[in-house]
Amino acid sequence: MVIFKPLDEDGLWHRPIIQDLNIELPPVYDRQREVWEDPARFKLLCTGRRWGKTKLGTLVALATALGGGHVLWVSPVFKQAYRGWEIFKRMARQTRLFAYKRESMFHIQFKNGGYIWVRSADSPDNLRGEGVDLCVLDECAFLEETVWYSIVRPALMDRNGKALLISTPNGQNWFCDLFLHARTVEGQAAGYRAFHFTTYDNPTIPTEEVDAAKLTMSSARFAQEILAEFQSNEAAVFKRVNAAIDTDRYENEPAQPGRTYVCGVDIAKSVDYTVITVLDMDAKQVFFDRFTRGNYTEQVSRIAQVSRIYNNAIVVLDVTGAGDPVYDYLSQEGVPVHGVRISDVTKSKLIDNLALFLESDRVRLLNIPIQREELTAYRYTLTRAGSVKMECTRGHDDCVIALALACWGIKTASDRVWVVY
Image (cartoon, rainbow, N blue to C red; front, side, top):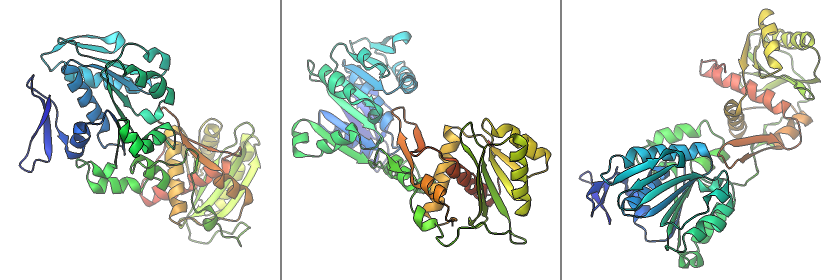
């Protein structure tokens, strides 16, 4: 039996104690305790990042195994499963019931017959086996729904096992459907209970830290990752695109003496276009050019000329692949150039920053049909591994990337720090 004893005078922090064994576990806070003590058989826990859902899941799993129960811990991919395995190893060794571990199988055995078996769902059929007393599905919104319905749920039948399904949302998928079902009378009658908490609900994270994160994330990403709201699986990345376009400005505008400009450049890959976008420091777009890939000399000449026209504008250039030699040539020409090597991580930062510029009405755009088309067609989805995939659903995204690079240049210049990846 697990009981909770307060760690401070206010009783806000509690240390789980397995009473029969006199084993103390790391402390939990009130809302974690609320989930732990709820008698429901199937608990769905939907939270924002850093709420502490994985910590709670590992403690519930360990307490069950130390009580003699058979526990299955399932993560979407091997890397996540390995993190869980390392946590269990560290905690299990500190108990007198620890018997042995099988490293190759991610299996921990306790002297009283309890065990923890950590697996990834890379190959769901490999999860089939004997029944368990508890299954914890870690980041289950990124699992295939067959893992729950066809594999885990049947494995709980013969031992009347329980389940803890923990996750940040991943669009409106099966986890969303099951979560909503758990909130109905029928769902609760079937043993389900749904819990929803945001990152703000974690008392160990200062509110100002979460507010600061909001300033660097698009509204859709913040709603999903921090507020734990179920967003559309294929949502538009950019809001207020039409509001940002000055419908009467079709032509490029001349440089104004004394003004500072930033030039974002996306270099053409094999069949793409090279796009040059110039913004002033108020994020007003004054120049746009899009042309098919020429040789490096032609591209360098064109970019250098635009930079000089706009008062030696700082060029923020995508140096991935074809952009690398262009960067070298521009540097040799004396053009003030900063390179950004675009990866999944840096692209996410660039796109989120552009989304913030648009949502806050900070950027003013020329009326360029192809640019409008790319911005409105840009979508994002979250993969089951938890990474964000962003793409233009109509092919090219050269205009978007060039504009994002220019806005990133304004952001980093405002912060007085040029970030070069």
